[in-house]
Image (cartoon, one colour):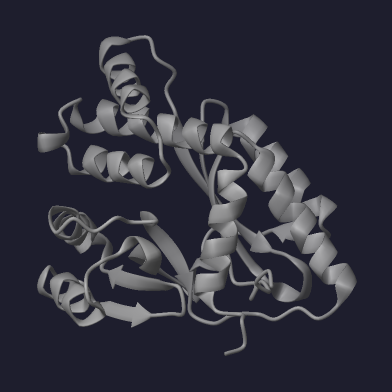
Length: 246
């Protein structure tokens, strides 16, 4: 084991997110607002809202905060309109970066994203310049410590529900789905009483880039940190094979 697996990245990312709960709740709050606006406030009739609620619960967002967000989005006709925008570009040594944002001011967001890339000596490219290096997939991570079900039974539950792939790592299981089947698989696991550490549709790199140059690592980390701090940014995907913390 190299210790450079995607699982290590996810675990590291989750730890980092745990230290920034406020940011995560802001992100999910916007996703709730957009989902309600698009499909209504009833999760039973709105699969996108169901998925966002699952993501909220995986991030330990309190139920009353979720309910408040849904009610606010449903009842406020003058609520801020968020638009989805995506940016693609390159970090040091050709690392590929995709940035998803929900914004009420595209000019501000574009300037902030461009600045984050520039400060890390990278650059924003044209739409499609790096997204072909990623696969859009539903990804569910299950912490082994939280899961009482036998690995084989868990795998069969996931595959029977329509999952594409199942992998076991040292401290977690990963379930991969087609984006269209994500909600169905997630709900099947939920009904089976499986606690999920994370559950979302994400962009998974087809190949990973290792960085050995300290300056390149520092510059890429700078770009990722600046993007992470931006309230408009919902998600950042990259193919840096980030070393896991020992």
